[in-house]
Length: 134
Image 1 (spheres, rainbow, N blue to C red):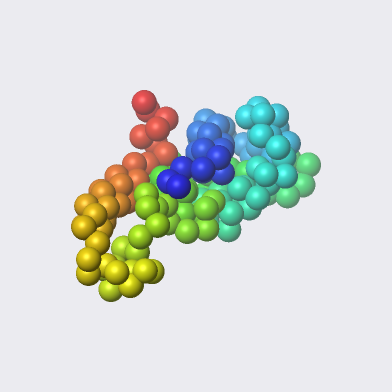
Image 2: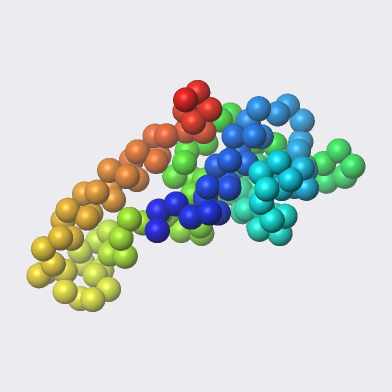
């Protein structure tokens, strides 16, 4: 699956944080987005671990973008929260690493691989700033 709820929530959270100058706590984000706090906490931790967000502790703590919104690609966001690159299909990107060992007779692998490459390029080029401007 390409976009899960985790990816969707991560993107929505980043859009909110891109409009804030000060750290926003997970409780406030959870309420604003109507997302379970425990689920959102895992998303925020993943984004912070991958340097998409910075986290601050304390009374005025919370999360802010770690870099400019134009430098945050949707491919990076999705990969961060999913723990792997997004995939359109369950096939390997390399014909030599086919999980079924039948790539040599697969008639749709070339098409699916081309589709995956186009999606990867699109998500790499699509930045958080692009989503905010639309």
